[in-house]
Length: 112
Length: 112
Image (cartoon, chains in turn red, orange):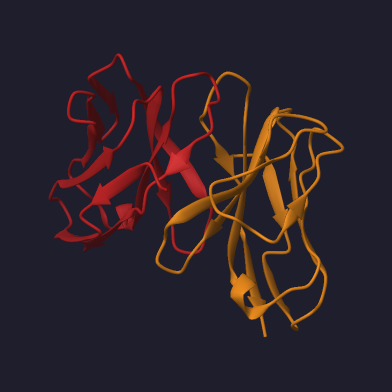
């Protein structure tokens, strides 16, 4: 079964607005990552947050992690039409396997 | 830019044919993966490898097989393609000690 579940499944916003996507997972994790996928393409790694970190920033991206709630959020600030894509969270379990398991993804549409 | 390549990008093939999807990476990564992605976006891990001569089945049962004779090469084979195999197949790799994955562009397989 899949580890991560993203919410919402789809999100439609106007350019300039912020977009927030959430990811919940079921078991303990080692790391949590967020990826982006443009239509029909491969996934691109955006950011990794370790289980002992609570927040991480990269440009317009802000990721939070709450291990007590087994959840993470990805915030994209000042969105652009080019941010239109699907966003996935991926987790890997403690123990050193480092095998990423992906959720269902959130489809983001940013209208110009 | 990730140095991981999948060929072909698109393949339409008749039922019963044998096919091999190619995946190569030039990053020297030990770990390689195959994911199957449904039209509704969810990624399922079908095979992975920790290195040469290592192959493991993933979370989703698949009739495909893989081999890892060389570090850089991780082909996936279907002995007898069926319409139920129609999907997008994504290959990825990561270095030892991390789950940050680099993806190829994918192969979209259609079995008619």
